[in-house]
Image (cartoon, rainbow, N blue to C red; front, top):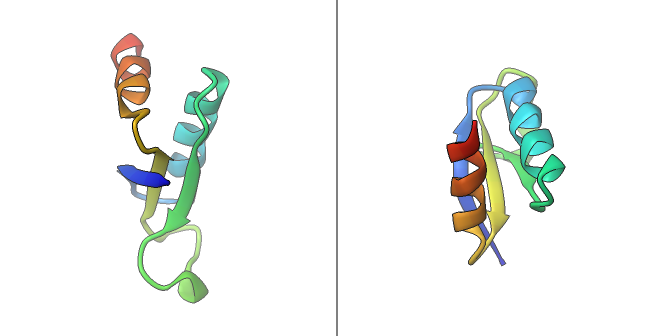
Length: 64
C-alpha cells in the first residue's frame, strides 16, 4: 500500500525527489496528477512512499 507524500510541480522535480529517497533506501513511486493518459513533463506529479514509512521520508527531508 502506498501513501501520497509530496506534490512536485513537474516531472523533473518529481524524479529528483524519487532519486533522493531511493538513494537513501526508501522505495518511491511517482504518478501524474489527474488522468494518466494526459500527462506531460509540465504536469504536477504526486510522490508516493510505502504506508507506514512516512517517518523515513520525514527523516530524509530533515537531513537535507
